[in-house]
Image (cartoon, rainbow, N blue to C red; front, side):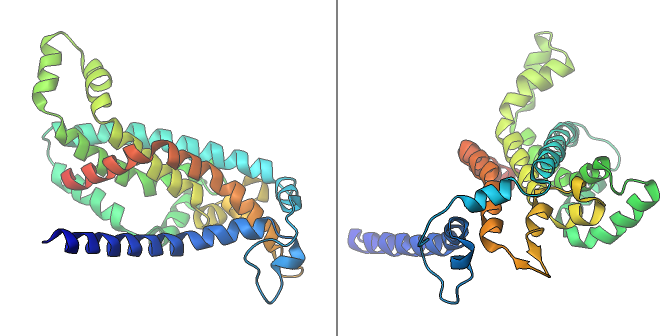
Length: 279
């Protein structure tokens, strides 16, 4: 390939990438744009690409609205517990599946893979019936268990790939030096599989943070809902949807995910690619 053809291909590739980024970012821009528009501007037949009279009133309406802080606390509590349990159980399960040989090991791995591939909506009705019989509907314990059913298979599968990249000789050397099983896991293996732990935690965080269907179906009271359900409260069949306030709430809702992703994006990309190769 000549240098001229290489440069032409690179220009075409960069142009396509820029077009894809613009298409992907436009809904985000429109969300932010609408969040700063007065309600009258957001409802016009001819949309404007920038606010004519920018205002922070929509954020005031959203943040001081009904149950915002309560639902925010619910989201932080449920998502935080889900991520911690998913990482801890996932790490122990991944270590066991990658280091030990036991009967049914292959069956367990196939079951984890199948559970990871099933869509959450397919499990909604069976899970609802089981939780109803167990008395877990309307409880945060039930909501965390439902989220773990979605996130734990992925965490196990990704972290198992990272454990497989660590040579067994590293553990054997640590044991010869007198390290216990817990010390080997915490001081030797954990730092080496940290990118996988971060990738799994990000997936668990985003999956639980963005969920609307499970929280709306399993929780009974408005005070028990999470933020995605709170966002839907701006849609009122009788009074119409307050799009400006809803977009302001969406901006606030998106900030934790964006900040979290920006902080760990490099480790997330390396973790996902390594897990995909070794998984």
